[in-house]
Figure 1: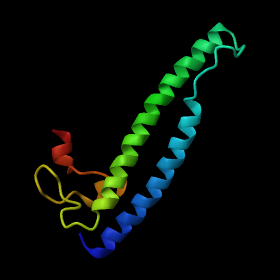
Figure 2: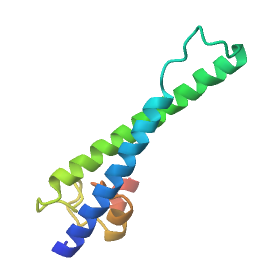
Figure 3: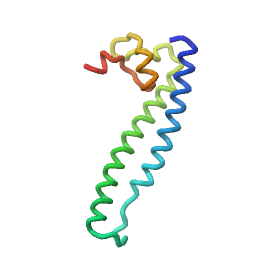
Length: 111
């Protein structure tokens, strides 16, 4: 991977990090506890609890993605960045553009 490609990926990672951080902030607001004294009705309360569970799962996914992005940003200047951690071959540029936090090439990811 040349310097230009690395710079493009770093820019993409930083943009993606901002998006994920914003999403996490919104999800944290949606995962607040439903107060039992809130008079919203039994069915609405069950619906709110269900939505809270869905949002908590989305929050965990977003936090994992943020962690992977931060790890990629930390390692972007290392020589092994952009190489598959299983087979050592270069990760396809298209994959890195779509998922810059990827640490596996397409072949190893499919296994």
